[in-house]
Image (cartoon, rainbow, N blue to C red):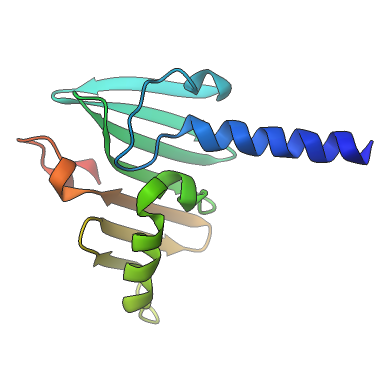
Length: 146
């Protein structure tokens, strides 16, 4: 029984780890059938995949070339940011470490060479957005993604 439970948890982690493409990664959309609620929305020169799981909403912003240029999240807890940031996760951690949160401030903005991040949270309402400026399609105002 315990082995089966551990195997099931491992499989669940593998499935969710491969469903989100991660910043800068390609998105072929073939893995989204694993989630209960996925809504693709065309918005001009990009597509938004809205994924809802475990009380968290994650939006992946995909350029016409199929690359994830931004991602946002909101919910009662923080999603697995390793999945959202993909290959940029270590860069995110380094940038965040250089900009510790200010006591009493609900939001913090920080950036690295390749990634810009805005994180906000109070109580059980946490939001965030991250984007890669060099991958944002021409004519897209990143402030409209917030």
